[in-house]
Amino acid sequence: MLRIMKIVLVLTVAMWGLVGAFGNITDWEGTKGAIAATTSMSTFEGGAESWRATSNPAVIMAGAIFILTLKIMTGLLCLAGAWRMAAARKHDAAMFQHAKSLALTGCAVAVFLLFAGWIVIAESWFELWRSDVLRDVGLGSAFRYGGMIGVIGIFVGMPDEVR
Image 1 (cartoon, rainbow, N blue to C red):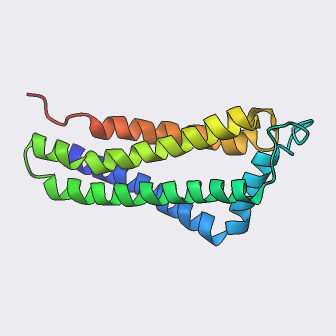
Image 2 (tube, one colour):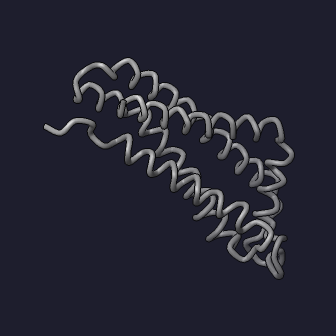
């Protein structure tokens, strides 16, 4: 049962990535708008005047592609990892542990996206922590997602059987 729960949790991370990517694609203007609001630093007083603030379309597009690409990678890696885990679920502990590698890589990609994208770039570089409008919506969500996916990755990565 523990192995099945690990597979199901990896599938939820895959769903997070793929549903999120779908949302980014179907609301591409909204995706770019959220990035533009962050990079322009216009959602808090004095931000737009900062030398860091930018409305450069290339920077906005690079951010949107970064997010979309890493969400798709997360989803596909976790799907492939769940598939391999399901195929190995009745085998010995070493084989099941080995089957987790793609799933754990998918979780790591998601945590990288959320930490690098939101904490390092948005919060630290573009000072999103100063924005009453986007702080909880962006940073709070990223922290929750990153924390949950990180915990799932740690749980899935733990050996199932003690020898």
